[in-house]
Length: 501
Image 1 (tube, rainbow, N blue to C red):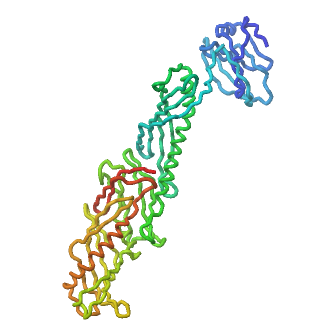
Image 2 (cartoon, one colour):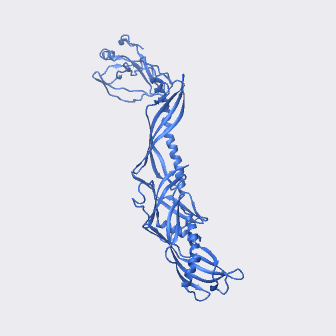
Image 3 (cartoon, rainbow, N blue to C red):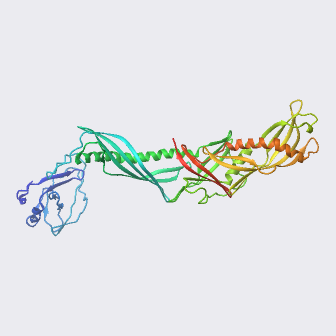
């Protein structure tokens, strides 16, 4: 192939990109423009277009045969199975005329790309060994994004040791990782977090005090290598962190024991409500007795936690509806947990001969909890039967009472459970239900009930309510300094949160 009009400038191969099937040659632009007026045609036998490149730093001059323009062509012969597909039509203004280009595509083949224009390539990174000494995270910030999830910002300082000759070099590389996490409802009724975007931002590395100076060139190569390694690993670490969080969030739906034969289970009933200030989760609580759910006899109304309740500035605010307390008491009543037997010895004047007696306490009616602002009360209506032990060790019913006991209910939180203690409010109300020993004077029975009945009842209730009801929680997440607030028809728990392995 010859170029008679280039006056001594032999075509020099600039680069080859075999995956696009393009060959490029250079010639000074000052030589090309005059040729366009002198040369009618320069082409190879296969009529392929030629790409001319100027010297380094000058614009690229690409020529192809538009109508009315001279043709400057030179291209290696077309290989078999190559497909002449116009890749692009790029209009370019050069010396007051328009030019366009077309390229051919063919199967990629590995080829050596010669250097051109005597450019000096970047030196490769010497065979250094790099060790991570320390990772410090001075800043960790979360921000809620309305109707989406959470934006995460982490600032970290990586300290590296570069083993080189004559002595090691210690570098500190500041990094900031930005990530967006979407919060949604999982298929099993738990919150699910997923990373939608992640961007690591690198600052320039600093040479630690005490390390010898290093030339800018090798330092830049070390930084480039470290950034390339960290770029994907940082976002992968954030993704792994989120996956671990999802495993923990999945424990929200686990069964938690209430008693020997009863449990409580929480689950999400709708997608999270996310604002710029908070994330709200609507959670349903179901109690089970012997594997069967406890259902209230009346339809429940949806509970919505009002804003600005509880303590200001706390990390978590948990609202518990009246229906939850009604369900818990119904569970305890059905399980027979509120029933008790009280043994003792009545005074001799009640019977011809002193004998051991027992009080059998049963709750036929469901206990009622009432929630008023700053005040919670519990009402029990026990049926109390007084029994005497006969000579054959069988119990004989003497008399029975219908009673009403009003109690004050104090609520507290400890070890992820809501617990209660009670104390009697006012006098115990009683009425004779039956008697096998004749007339019963209730005025004389009242002191007996205070002495024999009140203390055992309170001890039994406080032990039972002290076992507590598990609150919504996930593994390793703990309530810190919780406070309980009683409002009309619901209870609020304000607390900090602590994640601890």
